[in-house]
Amino acid sequence: MTTSSTQKTDVMDFDPIRPYEDHEVPEVLARISRSPQLAAAAKQLVLPSFLAGRFFAPWLTELALRFSMRNLRSVDDVQGLVSKYFKQLVDRSTDALTVSGLEHLDPTREYLFISNHRDIVMDSSLINFLLLRAGNETCRMAVGDNLLHNQLAADLMRLNKSFVVERDLASARAGYRAMTRTSHYIHHSLQEQVSVWIAQRQGRAKDGFDRTDPALVKMLLLAYRKQPQPIAKLLANGAMVPVSLSYEIDPCGPAKARERAAIDRDGHYAKSEQEDLQSMIQGLVGDKGRVHVHFSAPIIDDCESVPELADRLDRAIVGGIRVFATNRYADSLLADEAVDKPADSRAMNILQSQLHSCSAAERQFLLQQYANICVNRRELGIDQ
Image 1 (tube, rainbow, N blue to C red):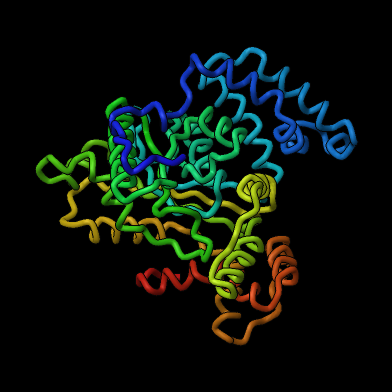
Image 2 (image 1 turned 135 degrees about the vertical axis):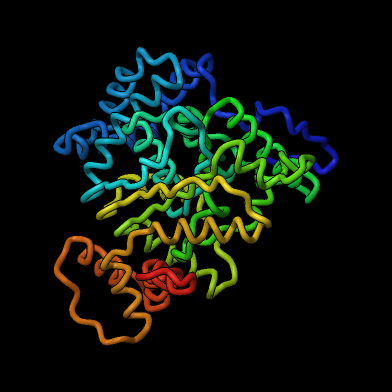
């Protein structure tokens, strides 16, 4: 999505970035139901395991999806179906899904959820799944336009209440207008009493080091820049809730390590055309071990500055992350400490397999992904 530097963007025109609305659902469903990519990606989720590997599985999956979609007329209908399939996916790809902190949330009001970012689709999907299961309304989810060059991915995300954060822009001026539109759209959503999720920084934390980019806070404040005490207005309009996502195993870990090793070696990394879509699928269906999601208490009192608010978010998000044995083991290896043979658990066995699949250079980057949770907590003075 590219905007010419001479083309003026109407920041209050939300049509280019908003999720699909109810009247658009039938047309979009008709389009995705014919997608060979969707049939190939969803066969393991839709079909029993004894059928998923057969040559006719994509055809049978397409029929099953069309049958499931036949009565869907609204975004809520779509989210109901997605929730059903997502529960099956969670049951298959995790050893346990736990949640804490939901008692901090009032189901009758809207929130601005800000979390660490490890997986393209799984992070926001887990948050919405747990909110819906607890009787809360789901939230609109921010997704970078770099992920929406694939029409199927764009359709699936915008059907599921995702809105677009424009990044691929031709000039600094166009970029500022796009950030202003995003800020106003988030403000607009909260005024409509619709919650919003956004990651604490652009892109996944491929090094496992979760810190809030102050530029995110500055972007959120753009909608309030003409008001006195903009930070207080931001926190008052939709109480900000830090959310911590913890994965015992990252199914995309080796791929992230390969990318970081290539950048370290060559100075750049060129993604293949389908790489983001493949990462989305792997992140959804791959083994994740135990997964924990923690909702911190809302930040409702004023902060004096952008750095102070970013620090508050960091301490809440990093403090809420669960430290698993996989993290401690990687931290010990990188510190050259004496490490006993890891306990024979499924997660540790998967981590060992990931390490064995990496080259020596990639192995260091993979270990960092797991270890940096511990490093981050030490730097912030949080108990391990």
